[in-house]
Image (cartoon, rainbow, N blue to C red; front, side):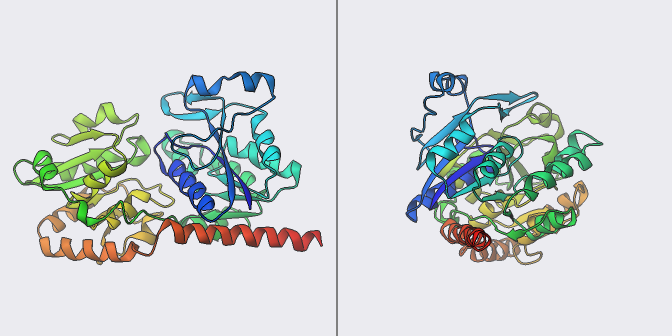
Length: 388
């Protein structure tokens, strides 16, 4: 199969959309398929090239992090949130799909660049699979108090044009169907159970983070308003507890005061991140707008019990009372009390962590990637029946 993956984000970006697009490309190559990635440029050097001006080429040289050619689209940083880049209008999207002779177009979290990919696929008569990954309506509630209805109209119009929409969790699937999105199927995310595992627990790192032997409670993810990291304030005030925050984003400047005593490690990736995950005693996710929540799954693979809001993706991932604790969303006291209950019971933490690891051991990217290929095959077969 020849697949064009049009994604709103790709490495070196660090987020769920970029990571999933990378894993998808890797798996397709491993299974003998031929993908090309189309993504926003991440630097001025990438976003302005002679080939864009001439239209003669669109530069599909493989990048260091990518297993396949990557077409970079000129982009600008999002005002107030420069870590997110928005692709500018460009002929490269349609050119890449045409030049690759795509059998199918994969749209990762389509909103700006993905809309152009959808339009190009439609003009060329190529089937498209849209992967829903970002709760844009939830973000609209956070950033624009009246923007939720507008966000859902945008989501519905984009995904209704796809041959199939893939939702990462049952909560996301039900939201999409309730808002009129047709042809929705479930497609969860995989986790690297080799990289993320309990054996990476590091006593030296633990002594560095908690020199007095405190219980280490960690958050990993973007530091942005929708993540509501300030809900960890109650946990910061607990005696014998050290809160560790991994990540970066626009909320970082205000979190020193919101989370007194917390340790901020900034952005960490790869094996270093895996070592941090495994060295935690409890992992806490605070954001209520997750369509899946990959960091919860990585914590579970690391053998760490999880505290997460009973909303969105975590509902599929965390078995309350077996692998962790689900708490009411936006409830600082509930987060604090859940952390305290786990802090007081080492045996319970160990049992939850062991069960968490066991639960995710079969959720490899290979298994999830094979399921994605089955979705592609179903969509292509459906198009063939219509054509006949």
